[in-house]
Amino acid sequence: MPSPRSPSMPTKRQIEEALKVTRDLCPGARIKGVGPDGVVFDYPDSNHIKDEWEGKSFSGDAP
Image 1 (tube, rainbow, N blue to C red):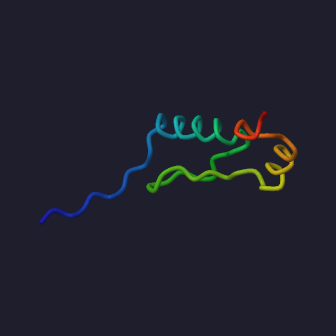
Image 2: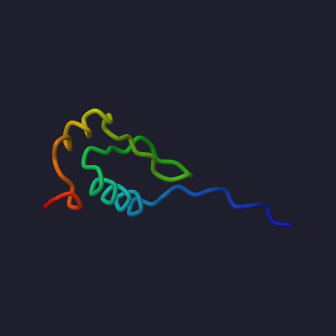
């Protein structure tokens, strides 16, 4: 019976694509680590995000 394959690291292209998508959603996100489980991101503290959007209407709330 063959042994199970070990997990492989993400490729440079996969890391760059994940970073691009994540930054589109949260511009302050940074890569915290890369490993066999994928890319782990670090996000700015939630108070900063709250301050950035506080008092602004979202598209569903706009008149």
